Length: 172
Image 1: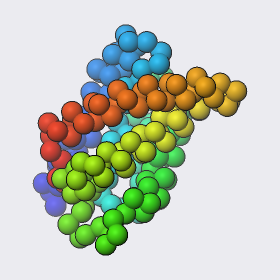
Image 2: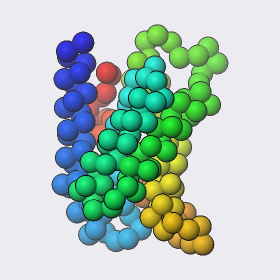
Image 3: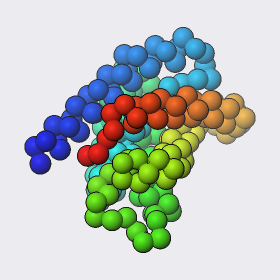
Image 4: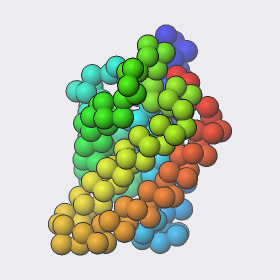
């Protein structure tokens, strides 16, 4: 149990540090339509059996930490809470016919295969990013701009997600 907790703590700290130290600067450098967000992966990699209420609390805490570094009070927290709430619905919607086996502790390519993982991660990140940009604009008047920023950020974020998952082969 200690190894599992230690591995997840290092993953949390590493992704969070990369998000606020590297990806924030890179997003500002490449323009307003390409925002790189890898931190929602932390919510996606939570254990499949975690209660939704606990996932929402973890999402809120994660979002508040990111908000602190981005100076966006509550926007990342709101998107993370929304994502954490939608997570069990997505897992149920994309559940294999026989259900998830007991050997599927987390949503990762190691347990689900790359095709299923990318499908779930793509929808998860789309929901997270769409909610984030909708909260940033706080109106659907700019729906086209919100959708464009969502898709552009989704492409670059999923690319980095694939690189990360390929490099670190997350099993726990």
